Image 1 (spheres, one colour):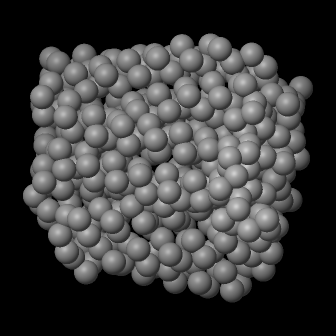
Image 2: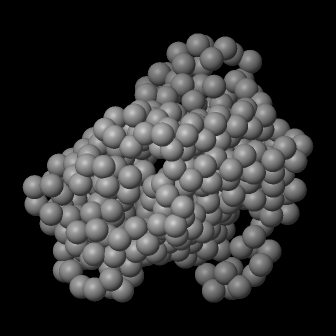
Length: 410
């Protein structure tokens, strides 16, 4: 079936929606992602307001991502031991509490930035477990044949929620203040929890190991030692995180210092970023279980790097958001492809740990965020992205030519 015919066939594009629990998980993810979109805008803005420093924005992003590195392995080991349907509810409840606590702190405190960064570590911990559990549970529900479709639609739900959250954030910050912004984030998490309560089954493809979490951690090392494909996919995810996804840390700098559009403009930029991701995911979901996913991985990574380099050319706000939309379409597509390939290349009992591996890989993002913040302070935001984009493009081409094992993945 051709690409156009697949995209025009609702059954193929939305195949995973035939599963009742996937519909509830998808809806809950949309709602929670509204809060996540708000949080992305809020954290960068409040830190830049308090410090007027691109480096400290990078530090806050690094702190938010640090738990992904330290908890990636643990979250994977836990995900293979627990009922993912139930555990994700508790994690969502914790996220609501953390956002509410941040809002309370900002209501009574607006001084040094450290308490805000410390709380962002707590939210990052919530998301480290959330991402691992959600990806594995999605696969549980839809099964291997619809894995790419289900993962694409699950990520699409994040982008849809992120668009709404990003647009709402700019308005709420300017009209109600940053503290009330975090209260709204907590409310989104709570509403998401309410939707998750409607899920019924652990999933068609679910397989829970009988080993303890400690035994799973020991087995984790063995998986990484023997499964070279998984290890290579982890390394690629880490490189893309450091030189690709870290561009997000510089968006507050572009909004305030380069383009001069303020918090409301930052919300619009974030919405376009999420909207670009939606386009990429719609195309990917419509492709179904296509062949040569490994080759596609390298092609999209190269386009991601080239898009970052285009920021150096400058231009007005309109051209900026168009480029931003394009690179996030690449970012969401490559991220989803990577997660799908990771789960397809391990046994059914190891899929939670495979997603923990992905969380661990993107957990090295703080290195990139700190680097981007320091470079942005020294060279400016456009030059920083030119450098990062050049590196990502070069690594993508070299890896695509040299890593036949990954390039030939079906």
